[in-house]
Length: 221
Ligand code: DC
Image: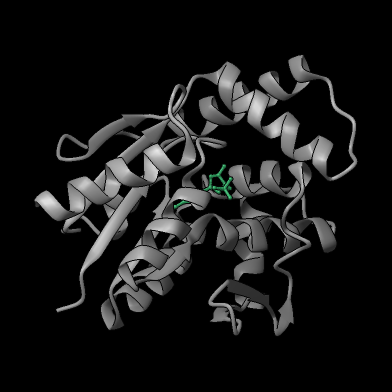
């Protein structure tokens, strides 16, 4: 039976960095589910579909094909209708579009089916918002990874600055708060900490300390 680790938490908590490293340590496949919602968000932006208009987004699902593969270094690549969009989806604009389209149940149905199929074949570390609650409710280990809004904004601003982009830290904080609110208060599969998930607040932890605390939980299971 494949083994599964679910890591949920708000935007900017470091889920992907941590999940990737945990997967590497354990020899599991890392699945970034946010990238799939981002690909749907990108499709809407590219095709002039108003992400706030649920019926237009839902009507476009039939034209969207999302698939996943792994490059030679094992990094997940996301394909939107055959095009590798892995870099294009990494903008704040696409992140916000992803958060909006992820509210719609038919979008979730499409992507959850793909995620469950991937996890049925091999041991995975999967990160997202609804992994422990909906995608893999029977996951062997569930983690809820969070950090304070201030710390998440500081990390995001540092990332943007490293990419040569300027930003206003207050603006980044505001965007994070808005995204948290939308992700936690939507009707369909909101971000929640399920009772059987272990809470890790990484505000005062280094990346290595966070990885080690998850590996400890997996080993002690
Ligand atoms: O983790 P991320 O920032 O790449 O995710 C982008 C958006 O996609 C996020 O704001 C909410 C949505 N999402 C979701 O609803 N369910 C998931 N399992 C993963 C992401």
